[in-house]
Image 1 (cartoon, helix red, strand yellow):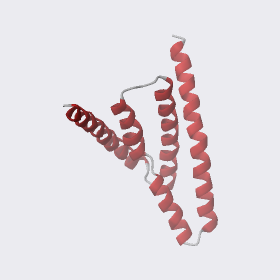
Image 2 (tube, rainbow, N blue to C red; image 1 turned 180 degrees about the vertical axis):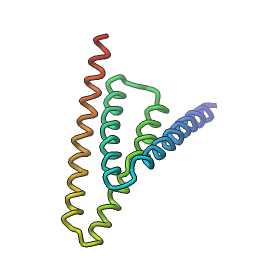
Image 3 (cartoon, one colour; image 1 turned 90 degrees about the vertical axis):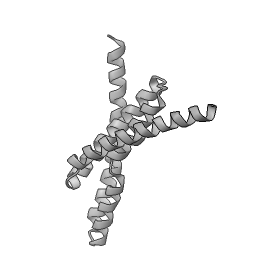
Length: 132
């Protein structure tokens, strides 16, 4: 009986991840039409992941299905880290070494910066929400 309950709970988590992953990948395909679109998607993904992770932690959020669905499903399919690596590889393969290095550093730095921005936004939203 316990094993059956665990299986149903796991199935629910996977279903939520799959549904939100579909939404994230569709949204990514709409936004990431070129290199600048990939950068935009990664920046938005970093902000969202920073915000969501801190929000879930601050509120001891216990709905594992939604938490995993948002982080692993939606953000995981929305962000394009593999596309990022492919773009760098293409630049290097075409002997555009400086462009490849610039792209690599720019994405890494902006990713860290906008993850921090997402965490700051979460703190601001939570502070405003608590004052109501």
